[in-house]
Image (cartoon, rainbow, N blue to C red; front, side, top):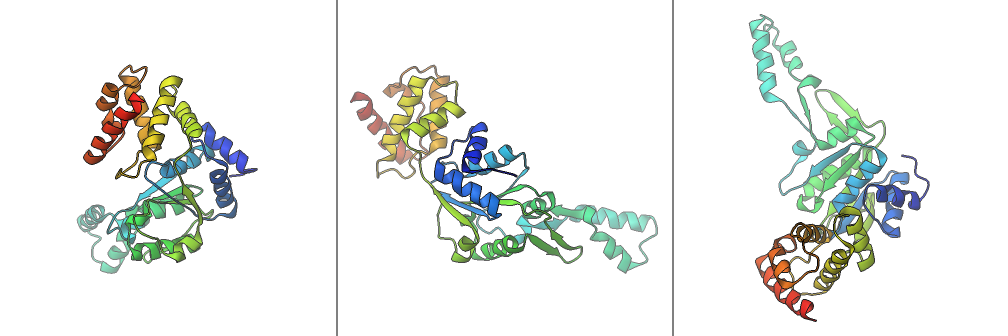
Length: 291
């Protein structure tokens, strides 16, 4: 993971198709060099998850993803025991006449071969790796506390097997859509960056990199319209870069050379995800395309 500079990080990410600005390349470089988790916040569709994927690809490291959700606990993140295989093992011992020693039989149940490693444990075992903790804001306070403990030591204790410690700490990327505020203790452990929607020229460059099949004329028209839509304050979910890419590809697949209201309406499902937004966007595009 030897990286010479933020420019080196930007170049490596660019080679995967992820175009970062100077600020994002710099904080990524510092997080890698300082072995600190990187906390990314921003609107959905701004490239937070994609950054972790690009980092793993650019460094040739495995990506281990933990998708957070309401009610997730340490078991889903850390490890569990393969109960059906343990039962089969007990039956095999009984069939072989080896079930007399109950204590030894119980010990054999908690062998490493019956351990189901969840994402956090896998990342520690497979490190060097990139551990993506996606949408951490959806989890609760107790799960945050668990994450903080793991990120402080990069080790976990399994009572039946002992301590698992990463020889090299995994590079951890946490993402948040800011549906709630994260606790200061977790934030202090991380380097932080807010990913905003890109400007026009960089978004055009992103489309050029990720959707090279789309013509330059269509590319610029798509981005120009999306940028105007994002400037509105009446949309429940303004389109992100992911939606820009989807819309451009959808128009391309329909053979659209230049956007008109008919092609825009036909492909609106790639751009907006709420009925109310669809009505507003259809009306707004009608006005923009007439201008």
